[in-house]
Length: 461
Image (cartoon, rainbow, N blue to C red):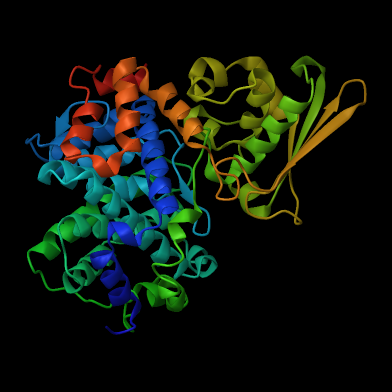
């Protein structure tokens, strides 16, 4: 097999077996899946969910695929809508090296094909691992700073590869067919930061899921495509979207070191880059008696990326900006000692006193000594006393992982409005023993809520 990155990655995705995946990696894939499902059921509360539902329903009139927490749509429609549900309320995973959400692109098409074909739980688990690993490996080969400098947004560019890998693995692709699927996935890679600050950045994720699905289904038909998309001299991903990238990183220790283990999860809704600040705020309020009425000022220090992206919303407008705002997150954690979707309902984020505190008493500064998601927070009291907290690794990061129990709690919190308690526990148990599941249809039947409240009403409250 040639050492070209696309083909080497295709060989890996096509041939990786359950026993090739270390137990810790398999268990983390289950954690990621359960977290993804928690995000998806929460996504029914997204402001734009009903709009994406209308688009998804309009793609086709069949109903062979399940929507998480709702009914049925077409294969493409369910993939699109499930992808959006995962990311709708800004609570899904992130691969921090590439600031890319992986699960909205990889999980929905894998679930759709697994359900359609009655794949075993073991096959589904392997497909998810292959998809997560392919997406993150393609990402680290990009040389992210150069990629980002050109304005590209990771999920729409990287995501189709992971989706194609997961679907191709379920369809039993050989290495050559998988490589063609990657060529077709790369031909649909798109999405830039021009969309930042709008819900379109979330559309990049669900569109990438559908792109990967189409890539695999077309490759299955033996459609001719390049098998060297990543490194092609003329128009290859790494030359066109970056500065030539680092293709050697794609294949280094492939199958031995699992890049998917660098996927971080989010315990709280809010942008991934400010999870460090949120962790620091919770550390601060949990360790110190801080009546909000006695706090004169909160000073939040973050690195340049976080400051540029999230320090610009002191007077946020609407839910989406509140989810991105350092000012609001700091203010509401101080006042509520909580950060769930309840804090992102209009009645809470539009509270005049809270808006005033966020705009006038939360100071956000750029500290060049901080990088990535590192953050410091300091509370100055009216009597002159002060206390502070610092975060190096936010809760949910690879260095500070959530436990399975914490992920289960997250799922219970957001699944409760859509499922009975017994159903919730059955879903948790099914994911925990995924490799013993005879058919993915069993999981999707549990996740489907045929009598759920219509999405339009759920999305608007």
